[in-house]
Image (cartoon, rainbow, N blue to C red; front, side, top):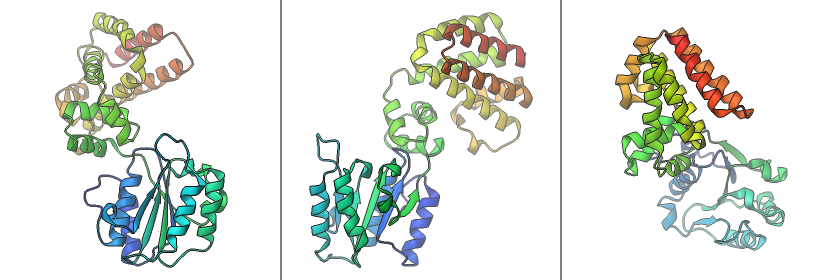
Length: 312
């Protein structure tokens, strides 16, 4: 059922169990961040219940905001209510409301009437990134299924299945905040791989070669990437994380920069876990300072020199 879908193991196990035990409820809310597989899993769930690919079945109806509009209108929900009265060809009739938070209050109230008097075969799945935008009376009548952000390894695999090269897929997954759709957009940014090269040079001078002159020079050069500061700092932390895990003997399957083992090994040899941990704290302190609008050049240079002093 879900074999081809990466990630969301808890959700997939829960839904599979519900099908096997025949404990299907009339309404679900699939809630979680954008780009984590909610719609894909909902369609797979529907396909399993209907018995064929949901997208090819008249018993599967997708409802979402019409093209060029920002909301789901009451007339769309009225059509759902009317269609619910028609018997299904299979055992179920499944209605997937995508971006359900876009329903107007009037549309939600119209849906509520159907939820209050469910049919024996109708199943409504609300997909939303913000369940609080739905009426409490709707939420109370639905089974909530929470989706978590995807891990970087799964996102990387998803991107690679779309033909994105390993280097770009790795970096994009790190910056994605657990969203495959965000990662896909990031992968189109031409500076993604440049930033990884910059970070590796930065690490080389700070942690491995311990070259103070080059640390100062490259920290000044980083002003050319102020728009991507968040990415740079996040990537620095990920490299340090990998080096700590590697030094502690954790299996390489847990490392994110698995395609950069040469530099990870050098980092692990060049600094103790305690020193790497302190370097991580310095980066986090830098993030806090930049969020408070401290001077970019001064803050980045101070971070670089502080890490250099800690690990030398």
